[in-house]
Length: 367
Image (cartoon, rainbow, N blue to C red):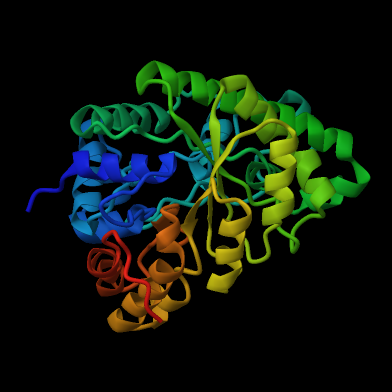
């Protein structure tokens, strides 16, 4: 049966508006390797043209049966952002490692090894430096075909700091914070360019799906996370007039502290997208404390149950999540983070089967 993208759009819109959808929505962050398994294409074949990337993305998400849609070469400012920096700053692009059937890799720290690298760092033009034009044009095709607005997915800023500066960034936090803040400003400027390119090619996004890895106790103190990441996220959201979907795949996030601080800064938090803590009851309490925030994810860690469990295990976990959080009408079932070659497709398909079986409203609240 052909995928009903109109129903998916209405389903997600209802959850974000606090209304009752027909069932709990399902979102999956599909990476290159899952798309490769479904389409049989290599990453570079998918990126060979905007049309090819759009087609492979649409095929992948329709096979998975999701209510979200994105390019399967994820448009967040990750490895391809580092590649763009390398191209415009005369760095060795041969260090960028292409894999045929999974996400590419850029070694950390090669772009900004020295202080001079940071001082002289030029930001890329996202309308010109590939594969950004291909990704953006593919996003525009997806929006036109389905009516699904594509999310703007920056990564302000710690993941980009670490990608460009490497482990030296952690030393800089204490020994050279002003240099690190200078790098933050350049990353910020690059994201502004990416945003303007997105608006021009795809249209103005409705939300900002931001990867916020700095806000984890195992990485930075809350104060440092705010200094080198949070203040830039808040500034961006306010300047661009975007609501914030917080994507955090860390193991010990500062969820409540982060939400409270952003609200103090006048930033609208639309959605919390994460899996840890793995205790479903933690998310139940978070939902009660912040009933207007959509909970997307909830204890569905891709390298745990989805990888090592059975089809039935996954379905039971999703059932438990739906029973406990579904009645709030602020739940989106979403494994976290990106599904890839390590998770059996049967377990990924179990997610769709579970929301269709247990997620129809009104939710039957059973133990």
